[in-house]
Length: 87
Image 1 (tube, rainbow, N blue to C red):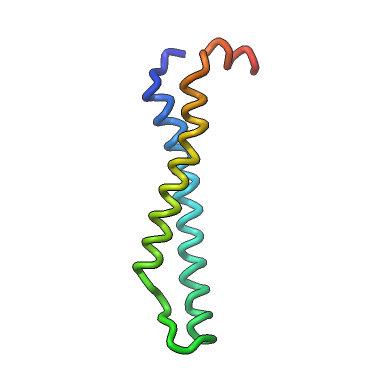
Image 2 (cartoon, helix red, strand yellow):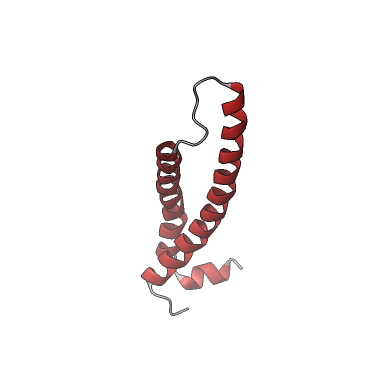
């Protein structure tokens, strides 16, 4: 009650991006570990390709922001009284 649309958008998107950041950290660590395993199995493959890692992280960040915008937009459009009525 009393939150502006900007506050609601910020809350929903920041919660989603916090989860996304944790998942990306775990995924990046796992990706680096897997890349060292693949390097030993494949000929001529670099262990770490920073451009590929950053490109994937940027792509996933963009997808996560878009995925967070849908529920944030729905949360902004609903009246607070209607939201409380369902709880």
